[in-house]
Length: 549
Ligand SMILES: *Cc1c(COP(=O)(O)O)cnc(C)c1O
Image (cartoon, rainbow, N blue to C red):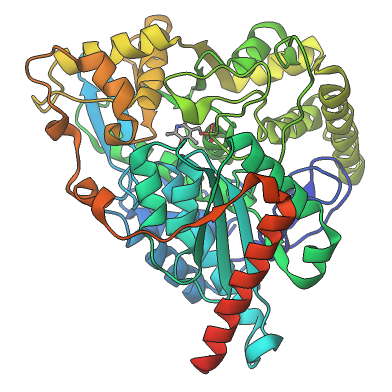
């Protein structure tokens, strides 16, 4: 099979839509039946992939992988290459996502995903998604001028991570406006500075004098509002967007090739990936890589104390924690947010503080497909059976706060995954322990709290699957400077530690730069936000008209 002739179509996990194009699923984000989009088939690797891809750069690998999911009739090869090139030219290292060895004896490696513009792993996907949005819109707008042009209005709420990565992914993109709400004064100073010092005309920061919850409620209300949906094409950038999962598949392959090229890797060795997990987006990309044919023995889910996934792998029950008091329903989920619903615990790894993991629904579909039908069933029937099961489960999650799966489903889930739960105390201990032990390069490594959750899980997994024949690649999802509080807590009193050691050049002086942000009063309600959105998009369009675009 040639990688350039794929004709990939997409369906909804709840069975409501089939045969969708890549462009449709990227622009739509969420299916109309409430389900998530997945490819109708997971492509397998070309038979010569191991030799042919071995020495490819990150960008070249991305091209080969994306070509298996995006038909060239939708995005011609040259255009796809150009989108990829532009998306990763913003990264600070040539390798984009380098893999470094943390512990030579235990064969523990870190896949560093934080070399993008906002120093967090979400950049890998959002740099790509921003360019995709622009590409599709510019193409739809060919030959159109002024008000005839389609315009995309991206709206999101953030408590930090996703907002900054989305802003850096969408800044300056033609025909796209982005509005990110954050709770005023409740975002870490670095993250607030990252977001509000971006001066591009299409970037709009809205500081709400409320909580993250209020911001999330405003987003939800806007998406449900028929009036704004008549005049504006709204889009979301949270981790349920399929393009984000797709973009993340690349680094699993990249890291694999980096590792097998290293002299310490014995031919018979096996690899386990360990992933600090919140919304299940990052590790789901690992699942796709594995199903495509990447040799990896297990994917290890590392949760913090918000452990719904860990509890699922222990018991086969997927359930929200019992709550006392009022039932709160989540809004449009942002990934990695402090969801202030009852039952969510605030931890030192806030980007993983979730009550439920949205992307888990995608895995459920594949499990149901495998377990509840056989190869001899007609494919359309297999798909609709899987969709029915997913619909029933997700319905029970909503109405009964949870559901149980059959032992056969849990067994299928355990073929590919293991899970670990890591406490805040253990997270701090790991940051301290790793700093104290010089790494393979002789330097002290400073882990951010999310990456430390991963390393804690990797060390446990390494006791079950020990070296020398097993290697662990643990994903490092953020730069330590983004989570200074936890790093300071862990390393205070260490003689060799100082904050200067952690702080990247790019962060110095950031807080003194000019800012652009609109204050929004909570008391003006979501209609107040709508007024701001409508007025600011209008001003942008008028400015574009004056500039003759
Ligand atoms: C978003 C995020 C995660 C969790 O990733 P998921 O795809 O939601 O599982 C982990 N670490 C950091 C730093 C993040 O920003």
